[in-house]
Length: 544
Image 1 (cartoon, helix red, strand yellow):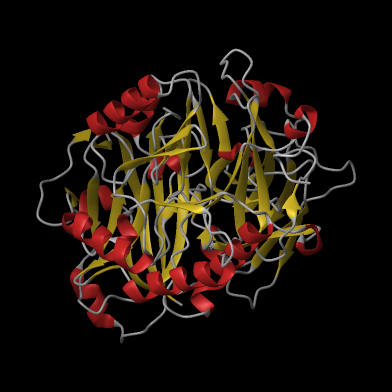
Image 2: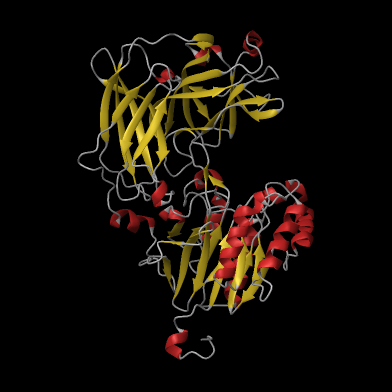
């Protein structure tokens, strides 16, 4: 039955428009590199969408051949009726930030993009603003103000790459404070973004407070700023089909591999018009109404010790329910007075992003022997946390370390604050100022320099282990915390995974493996977080 021949009641069941939305595909010019993108386009064809939106970072790097392959797939899959299209210009599709305009023109030609870099599309009576990553904030505010005046009484769709700051996972690092401040002024805005590389199965990827925001995840890999050593990136294959009705907007989440909808009976549903008092995706309301994650009464935290394994202690625990976003794992050491003192904190993702058939009943965290000392007793606690920050009761276990064989030490500093320079910026710079026994790190980048002569003591390719005990004071959870990594400055190369510092007044041991830099230079980079205090209490590099 066509929409035009349906009764008024039947027409009410049809969306006014359907939009397929993806982001961060990071494709190359090979068929394998476009596999997920092709799956998304097939999904959109099967769903008979009227509009296709890509929220930016189409290619891994500016790549006309990849864009041409993208266009070829669209032309092949939509031979009868092509949907309208929107493509957002973002960093990965620029040759350089200074040449963003030129890069977009090349992308526009190869992809046959039907609009400008900054533009507006009126589609079936609704306005879609097309916002490039580098838009000035005064221009963003002007575009929104003008569009609302031209089409009052309706939601305004702002299609962007960069999410507002702090409202989704990863957006304290990858989000924009200026965008958030502009968008707060416009309650009828529906802001749709990418960039932060999350999973659409994270229920907090839709947010409502002063306005409505949806983050569309990615079609590449997702990770996260979990406290501790950053976990390996995880594969993700998800897309959104948005259905617009006069009284509501539905955001349906699909696998682009199977074509199946996640939670088909409970899509994200945004009532229209927007009312902040009753908005269903208010973070405060969702925190209050969400159930606390709970371990089974029979659940136990187990410690499994293998002296021959490089990461020789494994913590094993069953998953809590309902879906857990992350588990916070704290290691405490018993001191001579018999009191446990926290020495390390790390966080791992829950199983929520995996299909039911791939979810392990038992989760594991493997720990290096570098966290432990011979014959010391440790207590471990595992705290489950849901998508909205609500915590459940922990599982706990104690374990006493055996006599541990000492590793060969390449470098050790028991007083890094006195023995190693901590300087502002990535090169040159001045000493970071101190306040008592802490550094007051108030610039974006600072570096703890390591002695260049130590790298001459080991041949290239030697596997090393980096251990550092750090005391950080970062009390404002609304501000982003620091990330750390070992960096070779020539050429610029991160030698170890990122390490994310936790909020609060925390002592933490971080352990990372790496190989020595070819340049003979290396420093510990501390960046991203806003002004706070940091103290380096101990540092060691071992030969593995």
